[in-house]
Image 1 (cartoon, rainbow, N blue to C red):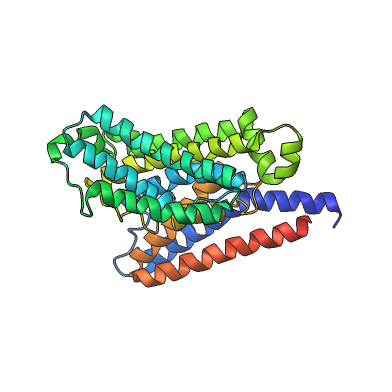
Image 2: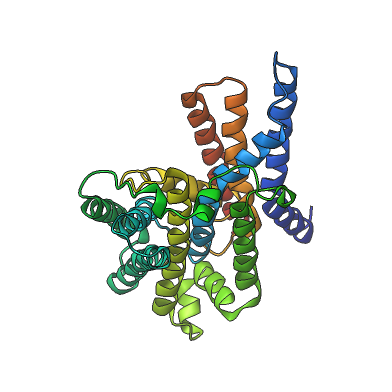
Length: 331
């Protein structure tokens, strides 16, 4: 096999491998569920809608994480930052703030969290893993301060009807087929894909992730780009905070603990490289849906939660292993 043929098949596997894995896993659970007594619920419309609804917050946060990982970074603070944003939103509603002001506070909190990460990473020149490991704990502490170490419960009448509708699995009206929050998720994914593919900012993100030193020599302001990338990720963190609050109706400071693993896993399973320089929005969507398919399929088969965690862990390790093999072959 010559180099051109090998490059073609490698590129094909990188782009469509995660999608093929999703199809195979989905088909496996659909077939197995149909043969069990009282089965067939996996392919029901309600279950499919619930799967999309459950994956939406992860996908929203993962869209920002996709840009971060492509640029060669990582953000371990995304989970606690989402909880911080949701807590700020709940706190604002509890203190009778208008919904517009509460949403603005939530979004600004996410952007500020991302901007702080970007400034510290670019100015201190410390590995993103270490910086965001520290801010992960800091944002958790900030959320607890806002909530006064308890759960913030705003009056239900302060939560608008449209926000409650974001958590409903069935669409209203029915002709939407899926809930509005899913359509918003898909629209945001489309916009991020356009930015990465057709803008100068997107090209700079890939350039910095592929080789930061070369990008700097080519005149790219790497420090400013990193701040912009993490701030953009913070914007999606704020949106994910709105989604989380719409589901829980409360601000729980610890509700985001562990969410960062799902967000990063969605991007990595989708084919992005932890070394930077490679990743797609379609892959991120596929990775998130693959994880949710495993969770839903295991639930329909009556498998307990520890089994789901083990399977997801194996899938994550397999995805990273494939990425490392691909990197070695490329070099």
